[in-house]
Length: 114
Length: 347
Image (cartoon, each protein chain N blue to C red):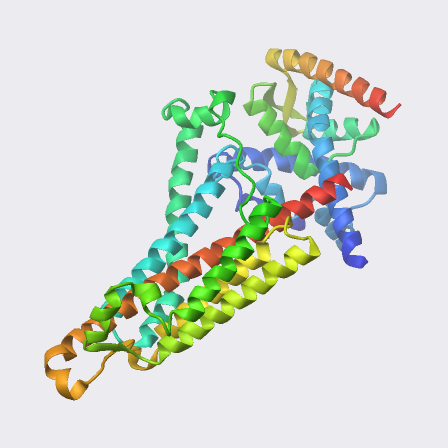
């Protein structure tokens, strides 16, 4: 019994992770229409109900920048150098496309479940 | 904070070396901002226990660093199904080739049975070598497919340029346990089974039924058969009686249409035992001289040679039977697994 509960919990965690993965990217791109550095971005997302681990968010920012969807610059703020991110022109186009996909998917699932 | 420094130091060790400093500077700035805010809320620095809890909440340094690594595959999801198929084929062929070589070569070069046992123990290393080569080749193909798309067009064809008309034709249902047979065929099998059994029982007293006119040459031959052939003969008779009884029961019960899975496997096992009886003949002697005192000098060497050849041939037959049996059992397992899977889906 204990074993099957653990398997079920693991399965749920894995499925949740898959479900969240695309959503997190969309949320980060959306939030970076305004400039943020890593920590303030994490706080801003958390204030809107989306908690993301440091080990997920900070590498994700790097990956999105490598893909050309974010632009970044080092700047001093409060006597500390911080890396600020914002959406690039490619990122804006990608965000629009992804949002359309997201809305269509959301609508479909709503229809299926209603 | 010393604990944070130690944490970042641990993270650094697993970061991509080209970007270590940059990533670490950013991570430090983010984490120090977070720490400052936390301490400002408390109005004091974190104590040791709180600091440990906070750093623990950041996650294992190895995990944190691994997220900064690019996604790396030895063999990616596109090539993996093909890799898995080739690997299984490599295992099957390596086993067949190694088995044939072991059965043919070892008896030629050595009379010691322990060499055969050694060959069996070497089999896993043969499989390991095959797996290593297949994995290595596919890892190289993966690198080529990722870094130089288009260099090997067949790799791109796996994902993009495929034709539905190029799909292989539908496979027939597995022969064992699969197709139901007709009543006429089941009756014919029983009738011919009885005729064969009668012939089998008659020919020791009337060898003409087997050898025809050749029986006169055989009776004049200086060679005779050892008693192990009688064991073989009675075993074959018993095997046919069992098989015929089984078929008759099937006919009476009206279950002739059901698959003959078990009968197929049982007949292979009986065949293996029958050949095994001859292979394990004392001194590997199957043919002997009728009168060694008279013919020993002239035909002794020939009898030895005949026995060696017969033994070798029977070893090969036994190996083939064994491979067929393993193959049938594997097919049977696969068939049962698919049947269960289909039953699971339709429930």
